Image 1 (tube, chains in turn cyan, blue):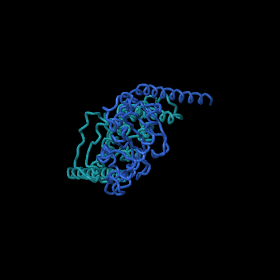
Image 2 (tube, chains in turn green, purple):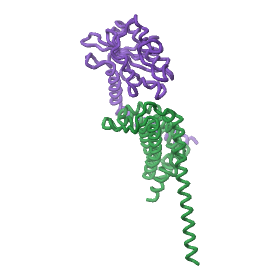
Image 3 (tube, rainbow over the protein chains, first blue to last red):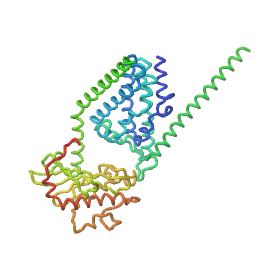
Image 4 (cartoon, rainbow over the protein chains, first blue to last red):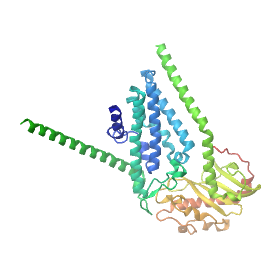
Length: 230
Length: 210
């Protein structure tokens, strides 16, 4: 069980594909103007990751070492194409909004990175779980960044939710404050870079604080032992 | 050595076949639905600029491709013809405003046979969010100001933004975008006046899925 715990911690925090590995930044920065766009791309990436991780793990003993990379690429490319067709068929509006960034999932190094570094060396279940966690870590960052930019830029959250969830979500949009003049910096690409930088900084700050607390606790433990001995 | 080559090549080939087969299956499975989605979206745009009550033909299928400088660029544009009982009632033209602030602005213009504008909508644009993007219906009602206005070729100066002496509002801080849109609509309407009968007479020659 601890193996799964490590995998979860790695994907969501310690080795988060977006915040630590800094992989797949191009789509990450480009589509995160709103929460829904971020969530859509995140889920699509997660689906591809799970599919490719499972397939790569299934064939890991058949595929010869010399040709593993082209085969991984083929597997990933076909999963992306399948996801693209499905999104085109079932979430057409979102497909139009994400546009070129769905096919670009192929070039997201996080995916081939996980295939090569993890799935090709592990059994199917851990590989699938790794896909879920890495995908979730990526999605969370996309949603956070999209939320920050949408909130600052337009004062809303979840606008266009119906594009992902269908007509049920027609009135899910939360207007936090109404504004005549949107904050352009947040909506335009520089806002994505700045927001991403802030997210990474926040993660590092939390990590540092945790590390500091841990060393302090260790010191206390030693002191207690010293008093007990004397 | 040849043995290794053969195994590796064979394996790559097998994978290529399997993955292609999977993609083909998904494609066949989703083909109809995708076409249906595209048609639904097209129809919803068309119905925004031509009320569904005034025509009874299959608007999305009664379409012809034209190329004309008046439509902004040299690329092919589509014209949809609305007819009621075989009588022409309205035209929907795709048109391009080539002189936006940032790239081309793609528009659709619906106009009835008496040259009254039924509606104009922006399909795609890359104008600055917060300034030029008021041409989008989702952002502002501005694009509706075209509806109901009748085009008179003698009164072309009215089809400009107010800053240039016309009747259409510009946006605070952004004149280039509305100027481009108004200009494109004016040129399109001028083109329709010249070619109305010919446009209705042309054979339907564009497939829906493109």
